[in-house]
Length: 74
Image (cartoon, rainbow, N blue to C red):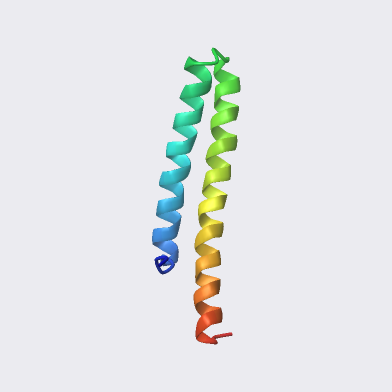
């Protein structure tokens, strides 16, 4: 069973934390393993962090929409 959607402040906090962790992880991976330049690593971090942030917020929005649809609210 899936969990209920988070309220907006908690959803933003969770998405920000997830995006920051993803950005840090992929940025360091690019820098240390692939020996990329600092600018390229920053770009990688921003792309993957941004995608994670938007995806997390989208998932919470989808959960909220499903709950409203199931309850018959408009």
